[in-house]
Amino acid sequence: MTSDAASFHRAGDYQELVDEISELLGVPATLENRDFELIAFGAYDSEGDLDPSALDPVRTRSILTRRSTATVRTWFEGFGITRASGPVRIPPTPEAGVYRGRICLPVRHRGVVLGYVWLLDSDPGPTDRQLDAAMRVTARIGALLADEAQHGADLSRELRAVLTAERGWQGDMAVAALRTALGSRADGPYTVVCVAPWPSTDPDDAPSARTVPHATALCTVPWGVTGQALAALVRLRATDTLTPASSAAGRLLERARGVEGSAGGAYGEPGSGAGRSGGEPSAGRSGGTHGSRPTENRGSGPDADRAPRSDDSGPGGAGGARNSGNRPGSGSSIGPVQGAPGAGHGAAGSDATRDATARDAATPVTTGDTAASGATRGTAAPGATRNTAASGATRGAPVPGAVAAGVAAARAGLAELAPAWQEASAAARAALAEPRFGPVAEWSRIGPYRLLTALPPETAHDPVVRPLLSPAHRELARTAEVYLDCAGQAGRTAAELGIHRQTLYYRLSRVEQLTGLDLDDGEDRLLLHMALKGARL
Image (cartoon, rainbow, N blue to C red):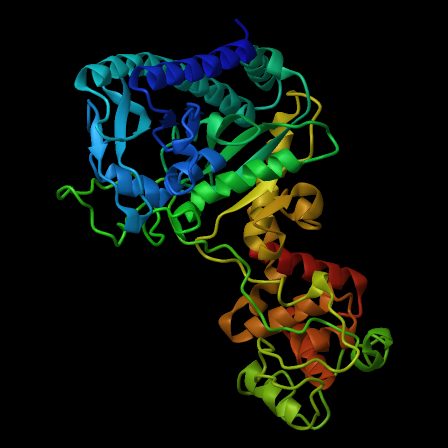
């Protein structure tokens, strides 16, 4: 039986077994895996079950979105379902969004819980004999889930071998083994998604491909010295669209961050958003006290990788500055601001102090400036326009603890998956270095990082920028990068940073003094620009 046929056969069996349980007990059943992601559900035959006043919001959300939130998972696991070997009754708690009582039938195989069958409890409810018969059906479901898990583990192993094999005969053999494992699914366009860093340190802890839209196989791959990244093989509809890959990347990012439990209430799910690692619903449970089992943390954490918000009004060519000359004078390096004390090499005090002195003799082009930082700006001058590519609102520093996803260019088949993985991991690195690319970055859109991420780490970190990266000169580094991002246009740069042009010229002269580079020289500009970008990696 081919891989496609086996997958279809299992899906049909799951539905048939869920329907069998629904008929045995006289109530519609749903089947979820152990991560509370929907596999199959029984039909609602009773008009009373379809009454909006009787519908359970948590169950509705599970069916409509094919998954439950992490808070819902924590809530139900608190009733001991992960340890139970028989039916578990869970009382209703309307104030927490659980309007109907539940009967949970744990699905086990060789003592390991692999999923749950859920029933809405009623009065009088199923008899013990009926529940015993239903539990015998769950044993058959458990065998199917175990078989699927083994098949997924085989695909994970083959995919990891392809992505990590050396070029040559080893890579060719790995691709051949993956093609055999995929069967008829080996043909057709594919791409690779990288999610990094993956929160689990277990190399075998990859989600099931069933739970990720459009994913064919997933595996973990070493990332850095001790970390892990998650690789997803995504089948595309055509080579000219990466939408399925972006959808898969978004789902994996949710799982990595644990944002599914960040806010409750949309469908009445219990609790107020605590995430997988804790946070019981505020409503008390009826029917006794249940100790919450500490749940496995599969990537819970704050949504920390967004670019910081800014009130920047954006770069503009205020007052015609966009069309003005790049810098005053020609053919020589920038001189210090007239009248600015201590402008020479041996000047005392920090760059911020000298900036403030330089600004004292100048009229700012914007209002609300903060000394030397440009981080908070007021209203831009009339005529200012927003330039997203150079905007301070989108150009941010790397965020500690962030997670991002990269998507490679489409491939016609499996033979080029290894270079596709390099592209996907490069895009993820770029999104971590430049939040404006993320949280899902396509390799085709990361600009110079396509080259920078291919360089050895020691090459990307050129010593020319070392003086600028010290805490005392951090603002000079930012000024130089913005200036180069703005193609050397002084007006745009000053508006972007929220400083006067004379302050900009002074800072650029300090950059030249510290680096020994001439910013009127194209090659020096290129070296500085790439070195500043590379320093983010």
